[in-house]
Length: 83
Image (cartoon, rainbow, N blue to C red):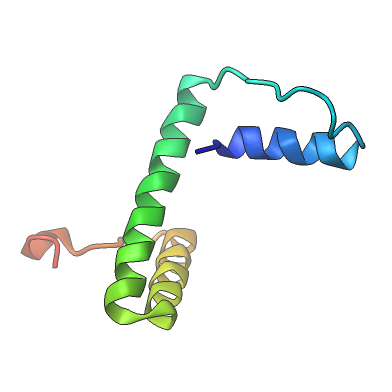
């Protein structure tokens, strides 16, 4: 599986017209590796949500989560065990 950085690099190469150049393997920083791991977790959660409750539910849950993050609201209620 290509990382986001490798996908971006491939996109830039294609846009520059150098699609015949050999692929570059960029070394990912620890931060990039960490972010990539979180994107994988998000993708796995999204796939599970879609399989169980449908695409609209998954989209709504992620949009609502993004709204809470932007507003600085807690995502879970830790006073009652996280529910």
